[in-house]
Amino acid sequence: MYDVKSLKAEEFINDEEIMNTLAYADAHKNDMALIDSILEKARLRKGLDHREASVLLACDDKEKIQQMYELAEQIKKDFYGNRIVIFAPLYLSNYCVNSCVYCPYHCKNHHIARKKLTQEEVKNEVIALQDMGHKRLAIEAGEDPVNNPIEYILECINTIYSIKHKNGAIRRVNVNIAATTVENYRRLKEAGIGTYILFQETYHKKSYEVLHPAGPKHDYAYHTEAMDRAMEGGIDDVGLGVLFGLELYRYEFAGLLMHAEHLEAVHGVGPHTISVPRVKHADDIDPSAFDNSISDEIFAKLCALIRISVPYTGMIISTRESQSVREQVIRLGVSQVSGASRTSVGGYTDKERPHDTEQFDVSDQRTLDEVVRWLMEMGYIPSFCTACYREGRTGDRFMSLCKSGQIQNCCHPNALMTLKEYLMDYASPETREIGEKLIEKELENIPKEKVRLVCSDNLNKISDGLRDFRF
Image (cartoon, rainbow, N blue to C red; front, side, top):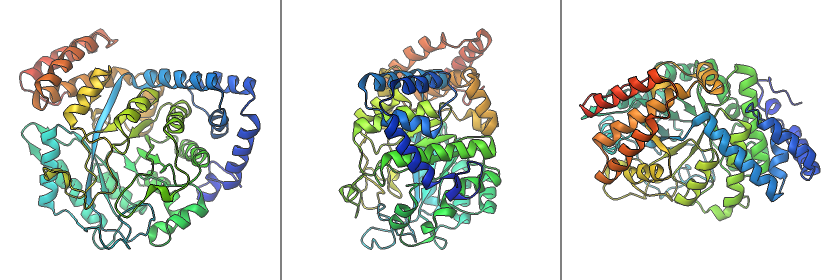
């Protein structure tokens, strides 16, 4: 039985409810009066439930789809302005005891090179990332209680935060590791992590069990209930995601929204972020083996409808996607992008991009400077801001500010100040010139005069060599 407030995976992600939702969507996809009423509700910026959103996803009327896109673009501007947060993944270890059939780290892949970073290697990777200009990382590791125990992850987090190189510093470490216990989530919280990220991969239980034939990850309920344990352990910023292409995208979309509704109903805080990866080629993995792959057109529609349905959430897209795809979905709702990513263990210290330990092929292989310049040329502010996390604006405190629009008074100036740091310390002359003009223009868009004056003063101090100002 479907129960949004249940703590049992098969009740808050209920197969019968999803199938009924998809049937309802098929039955009403041409009901223009209903679709108009759903769009009207979406314009209130309060979001949509999984059934309403599924009707929009099923609708293939071009005029209505265009209205969805325009609304998604406006909601993105209302909640996140023209800022795009930048981060990088850091792969610590590819040792893994699971048998996920879509991941090259699966334990039966005997020809991939296995590697685990020492603390000295972690330090070198972090310095390489700092020398690019990164301030925010997402650490990744396979599930292996012997090689990657929680103590190793905690030690790596401590090492990352401890490294100050020139003007570089990693100010926020997000964590993407396997589902674990309440006690371990508590320890991660105490270590000062930002967001805990865990992709569901697929919400379809039978498919999930086939795709994860062996290892701890085979347990659908334990994996699906991880966010509730994370919240119980004190982590109030969590990130959801599915791997589009493993199962039918409409099923995944409904399940993803149901998970967001569940977190909001039980904990009062929905997902801080939602990621939208698609199955990509990797060592020992052929994406054509999965017959549920989705087109760029469907992918764009999914991104737009996630933005409409969960307007407050941060939406993340990685370098799995090409520059052209990223351009389209940034406009439709994405608010965070990775830049200059390397998906191999120890990849940042190698001058040439290594491929022997990559988790997936990287489509967008530009440098961070090129990504920053590209964003600015499209009219976006590349933001390296980590202020909310460091000021305690997490969980319901962040959500209340975001939903009311008050977050703009913090985020816009913080984005400009962190961009200024990047321009001073890391940018090429061409990127710096474009950035200085953008900052001068965007300074005028800070609504409160007092905040604008303080921000302007701080920008001058950054020019003089001072660092790390925040609202």
